[in-house]
Image 1 (tube, rainbow, N blue to C red):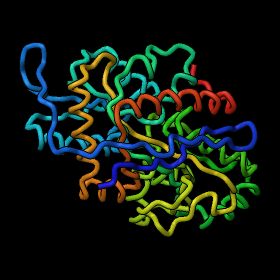
Image 2 (image 1 turned 45 degrees about the vertical axis):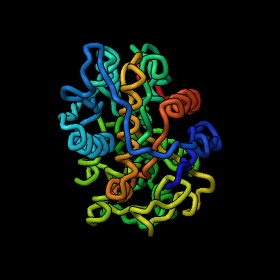
Image 3 (image 1 turned 180 degrees about the horizontal axis):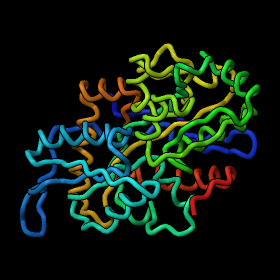
Image 4 (image 1 turned 30 degrees about the vertical axis):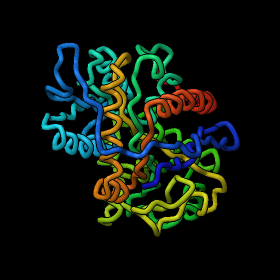
Length: 344
């Protein structure tokens, strides 16, 4: 078994000028699974878990965080014989869900499906009710994700170069959807605009699912949609994928080039999804959750499922995830500053 996985470079988007590339730690060593987990007890002497676990997803159902949480939750339910409930709490740029978890007891029964917005929000909001580093207990990353530059079939372009040429002849006439102002799809699109010199109009939505619904309906022309949300619709022919945002092509869409390959040199924007809990969770519970989720993600069937969704399976230790969150907060701070994005 491999004991080390490499994370694709994650980019801090510099929207005022040339792109600034950001890399997560290139390779993080992981201890091989022993096949056993530590015996855990609560203060009452009961083994964890003894009741249902809730994973709060701060977005509507159907988005990347929701898809990954339900897949992991189902496997945990089967293993631990306790229900793992996915609780969708969208709103306020993922802050509603995050605040629910921050205010929950740190007993391992309320967790947060964290995504890239978790590290972007501190720079978007002047007053945030939580600190993404101080107020959460990192458990593990689950997957790295690409974004798919997807267009409605009615848009008469089949390549990135054709899109750029088409948009330059129609400044301000083409709309694109995103999961909300300041979301990674929004910042990625703004980077694309900056790098290519086109003028397309942002239409923010309250989460990725409604943004996708309007793209499918043709109410907007294109979107930089996260791969798990976009891939099924690309494969069904409902959307046309022009390119992916990562440095390398993704296995779910092997024939779709990267934006870099498509004539925008050095372009890269990747995301990541993980699992965190409230600050102060007991170490043994964190260890048990980490061991179980890491093992589930590494199972061939789960890895295959994630890859087919366009998500690259990727796990870490709690300490590695903590370091990653801290570094990403700093990197996205520059991206948001350069973009001028602000929610409040």
